Length: 97
Image 1: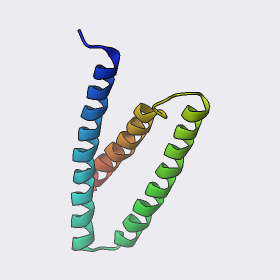
Image 2: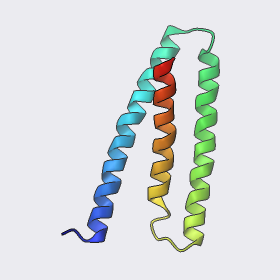
Image 3: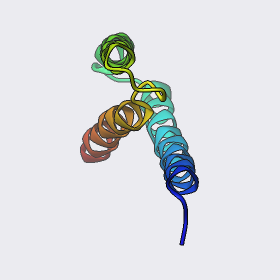
């Protein structure tokens, strides 16, 4: 029915859309937390920056490994899944707080 490249593009587009929506949820929850203040606001800000730096390094390693392995898309599917996992964990953690 679909050739592989069209299906792959559609899958990545869908995953990107989900990542954008989930990221907006985390941003809204964090901004609310920052606005309300409290003892753990500084800790949350530091965690946010540390998570971003760590995730960026991990994504870079994934892309480098894919490039060295000859993947033309640089492992975009794995990088997207990596970020969605991190964002989903933040949604769960911030929702429970």
